[in-house]
Structures are given as C-alpha cells and as structure tokens.
Length: 394
Image (cartoon, rainbow, N blue to C red; front, side, top):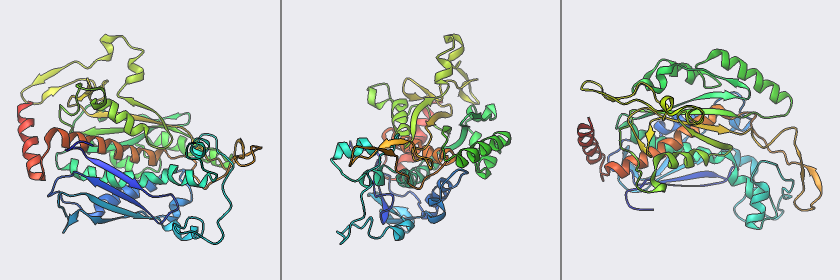
C-alpha cells in the first residue's frame, strides 16, 4: 500500500467475540465520535426481511486507538464491534482448545463459500469457512465506512442509498435525485430512512413486503438491486493513467466485494448499451453561476475513470441469500454422499441493509481518492488544498 492511501483491514468471525477494524491514513484533527459511526451500524441492522440475529445484536463501535478527546491524532485508528451472540457460542467458537469440540459442519450450501473454502484451505469443517465468509463481516465495513463518511462530510460530500428492486418488484424515484449536487438533502430521503424496505416509493414498499412474506413462508429468499448516490463530489477524483486507478473500476471492485453482490453498474450502463451514442452521453454546459453542469447523468458521475462533478451513481445487484430454511439438495463433504444443505440462521432478504453496506464501500473508495488527490497530514491542510483546487476548477 503506497503512502497517502486510506487503508482498511478487518478481522473477526460471525460468532466470535468481536469484529476488529483498523483504518489508517486519515488526517489529524478530524472530529470523530463513536455515535457518528453507530448511526450507520443501526441502519445496517434494520430492514424488512432480516433474520433473528438482528434481534440479538445491538451493534455499536468502541474506538480503542487513534482518537484522543474526540479528535484523530494522525495515526492508525482501531475500532471494535462486540458480538453479543458470542455468549451463545461458548465451546463452539472458543479461541483456546476445548475438551469436547462440537461436531463439524459438513453439509455444503449451494451458492455459499462452503465448498470452495474447505477445498482451498484444506479444512474438514465448513464452520471455519462460513464464520468469516458470513455477511456479519459487513458490520466491520460499515464501521470503517462510517469513519470515511465523517471525513467526506468535511468537504461537503454525502452518500445516500435506496432499494431499486426486490424480486420482480421495481421502485421509482424522483429524477432530480441523480442530477442535483444538493439532492442529498431532498425530502424524499427522509421517507427512505423511515421505510422498512428503504424506499420512497410506498407502492413498491407494499409490493416488496408481500414478496418477502411469501418467500419467508416458502422457506425461500429474495435478491434485488440497490442504488448508492454520492453528492457534492468534485471533478477530478481518480485517473485514466493506469487501469487499476480508474475510479469506476475501483468502485465496481469495492461494491462487488460485498457478500451476495454479483453485479455492479455505474450510471445507466446497461441501458446505455442499447442506446445510440447520441442518446447515451451527457451534454456539457457551463455558466458563471453554476459552473460545469449536465442536463442528464447517464454516465453516473464518471468519465474516463474520473469524477466529472455530477452525482456519483452505483448500482449493486444482490443474489438471493444462499442459506434457505427449505434447503436445496447438496452433498456432505465428509461422506461425499448426497444430502440436503446445511441450514444456518439467516435472512430472507438483505436489500435494505445491503444498500447501507454499499454506502460504506463507496465512501471508503471516495475517501481514499480524496486523500490521494488532496493529501494533508492535518484536516486543515487537506481542506486548504481542496479549496484551492475547487477555485481553480470553476
């Protein structure tokens, strides 16, 4: 990892004692309180279709290093999120050896990391795979992303998300959400935050709720698509200089890395593929009052791997959760005999929570891009660099 880059490392198992998060290279002087991060941890736990685990956990972060008197000191920041469910897993997930180890999990779940993980690491117990592969790990990312959001807000950047579809149901939203640089304050977002589906479309909310109810009754699961929108992002983050530094590629990798996400789209990517070029690109305009503007935002705020000043738009497509209460046919890894898949406590639909995780991953990529672009060992220095560039970019 080169100097100037924001680095995030997480550790911890789904039913272990805690999740541990390290964030390196935020500037000194950034005001940070645990409650700033807890807001997003609580948002991640909400949503219709979540499983029983969310009734056990009440996630909150403890900042254990890197912050003094509510302000970052410039060194690495360490955070901890305790697993309350750990109390129910004594003997099964102890770090030290136990006299009577629990029976191994050997029935493989189609769609999960079970088979690939035990083969890759030479394991005989799927428990050792699913504990880290579990989406419980996303609480770590949301904590780190919450810290990144605190940093981004210093520059007027906000990140929002909502659900676009669940199963066969599709939502609508106001057109200006993807056009205005200040639409992060749109009243529509208040409705999203109150919705158990995380949508401002109440007809879609009712339809999606019924689909989730039906899936739960059938012992099945549902996927869908969420949208993350970033507001107030300056022109010039990212570069076309190298393939791995293009911001669209970095965002796609970050969102694709979320458990269950199997597709990522920037702006109107798939719709644009069916359009003529004359209808696919965003006309450029300029005025002394508004600066650089576009009447459309089909590119999703990115051109040539660089932000263009329009709202950033990223879609994540989540497959249905792999663990089914009514399990699929499978094979027992130990006996190689046909069996049914292992059943682990799980959700029916994670789309409302997945959007919050998507926000975190987009925030981490943007915070890193801001650190690369504007540097600064202190927040004051970074803000001065940002203001100087913003004046020259008008």
